[in-house]
Image (cartoon, rainbow, N blue to C red; front, side, top):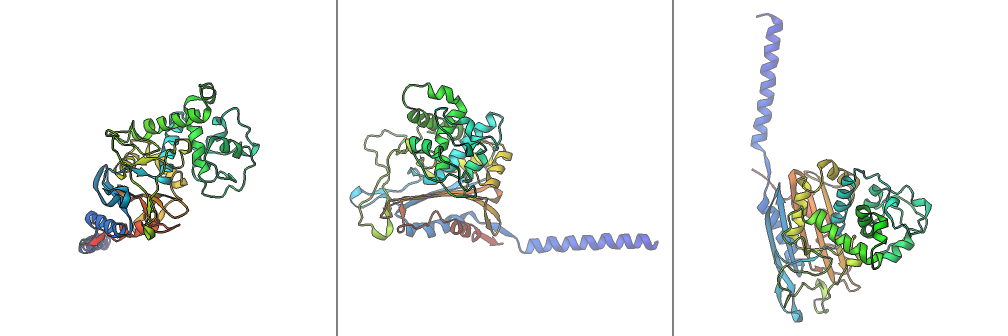
Length: 378
C-alpha cells in the first residue's frame, strides 16, 4: 500500500475512533430535563411562601403539568382553595399579551417594529415634535423616553405633549397603557375612532379589550376567550361567584384587598386569566399560532413585551415577563412567565406577597435556578 493511502486510512480510522470516544462519553454522561423534578421544585419553593398559587408547565405544543396549592380566600373571606381554574390579575404579565396584539397588527398592516407611533395617536392630541421618530420597537422595549408615568387617557394625552427624555431603557407602564389607545387606532383608523359616540377613552378601552381577545386569546385556543376581561370574571353563572382576594404573608391578620376593574387602565396590567390560560398563550406564541417565528424572535431580541433581552441560564437564554401588584401594606399579587430552550414554558401566579416590596414568584433568577436544578445525570 502506498504511503499516501496508508496515511489516509490511518486518518480515517483515527477520526472514527475520536467520534466513537465522543459518543461513548455522551452516552456515559447525558443530562436530561426531569419534568417531574421541575414541578416538585416549583411546589416546594412557592407552596410554603404564598397564600395560594397555581402553575402550568408546557413542553412543545402541549401543557403537560398544572397544579395549585393553598387558598384563594382565607380567614373571614370564606375559605376557597386556590385551584388550577382560579383566575387572578396577571399584573404586568399583561404587557406580553399587549405586545403580541400590537405586533400582530403591525404584521397585518405589512409594517415593521420600526413603524412610527405618531401616525396612530388621536388627531386631537398635541404631540411634541420630539416624538416624531418614536418607533414601536422603542415603545414596546421601554425606550420611549417618557418622563412621567400615566395610566389614563387624559394623563397620557398630557404626557405626549411634553418633550421626550432619555431613550435608554427605563421601565414605564405608560409605554403599554398608551398601546390601549394605539391598538384600536392602528386597526380602525384615528378618524373613525374619534367619530364614534361616547368618549374616546371608553371607545378605545372597549376596542382594546375586543382586539386583545380576537388577536391573542382566541387564536391561542382559550375556551372562554370572549369572556376574558381586565377585571374579575368567570365562565360559570356569576351567582355566588367569589374571586380570589389578595394578602401579604408576613401579616395575615390584615384584611385582604381586591383589585377592581382595570379596563380604563389596561394595556400595562389588569388582565385576569388562570395560569393554564396564560400558558396557552405561551404555547401559541412559541408554535407560530400568533406570530411567525421571525416576529417572536424580534420581540425576544429587542425585549418587546419581555423584561429585557433574556436571562442567561445553565442551558441557554431564558425569556421572561414578571408582574406584581401591591398596596401600601404589601397586600397584592405576583405573576411570572418564562420561556426556556426546547419550547419549555411555565406560567405561575399567586395571590400574595411575602412582605412589602418583595418578589418571590416574580424573581427571574429563582425560577431560572429551579429550572437548572431539574436536569439530572442519567
